[in-house]
Length: 270
Image 1: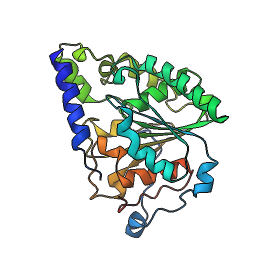
Image 2: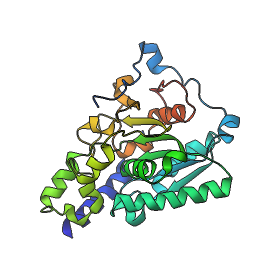
Image 3: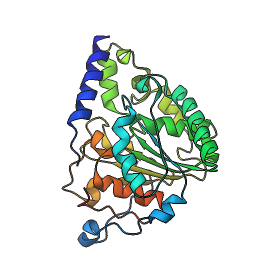
Image 4: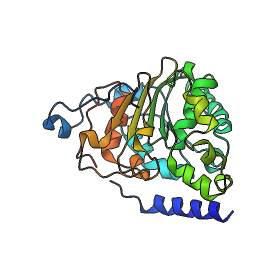
């Protein structure tokens, strides 16, 4: 119980302090020139195009209260998207599979209220695994057109393994932490076979300064996903795990992915 309290407090503190600023995977787009690195965002959607696009559901992560995702939601709304924020049940401490079932119900409500046949998912951290379970096992492949993850431990993270060890195998009582531990039954199941099923357009975004997803490469997917490393384009950009949902450069990738545009991160975006 003490470990769980410490973990929650540390994560909450990080939220307040964060700056605003696969080997088998399809090779991520490489910048052709330095100029392309720092050029303004190209092929970004117009407000009119975005207004006619799918509804966007922002899926939060562990201890990710809705208000923490208002900055990225506000950016999307400013670009003309219709946006909903899905906060994980029990702040994401519970079983990821159960959170995925709740996500299915939430998406159904969004589709019913908008009349949309499809939605796009922009996910952060654990929310990316919740969304993948929904797509792979709960019918989401027929409903989700685009999936974008920010700092999701797709293959697990040693940080969870360490917490699990310190918690004497219980991961401080956090089921989702156990499931995100490298080698867990959950990860074995979700990554077995095609880890990017259906006609969904899959994009992952990661940062080398991610303090919670280790190794950082575990934030990538295989089987045709577009995997983007912020520092592959912008070597001097410093972005932490929680900073991914606030960072301007990361947002340019999100926006381009939603528009099916060429990935050209703007290294100077704020």
